[in-house]
Image 1 (cartoon, rainbow, N blue to C red):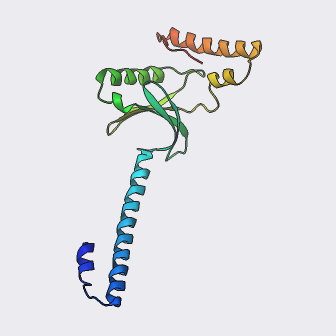
Image 2 (image 1 turned 60 degrees about the vertical axis):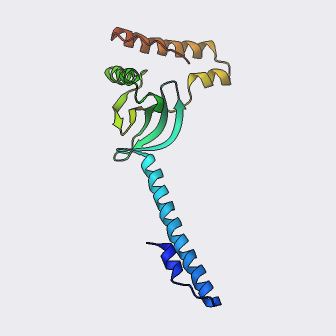
Image 3 (image 1 turned 60 degrees about the horizontal axis):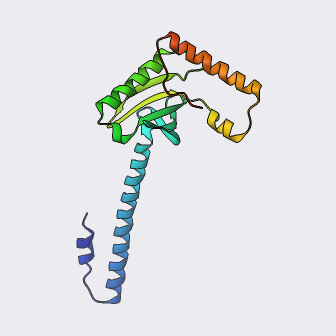
Length: 178
């Protein structure tokens, strides 16, 4: 498809020739624009997919990765997908640590510890999928209002219970934060 050749066929000098040339150019540009928009939409749809997971929105970010809300396309389950930051995808040390994190979490089954569903690589992107814990994090609760001693005791006991379970399995968490 060559828009220049198409326009060159209308080389007359009368007003009708100018209108025909202008309309032809407009049609050509509309077709090209439509093809570009269609291609961009396809790229956006592709970027929002990870195998059987559809990414919905970013929900968090940490030192090693970014976490997205996602759904499993076939069963409709909401989950969290953690992607390793792009700057780390070539670091064997970081990839090994990320894989160890996934394996460690997958080996623990406790109500106070997030469940891991999947771990892998899609192109250059390393990811792990895990249980989605809806609600707000403890830091936001603490920053938003005063917590009563009874609430604090309830939170501390749940955290200690989960940590003890992990410790009993030989896992030591080195980065506890609200």
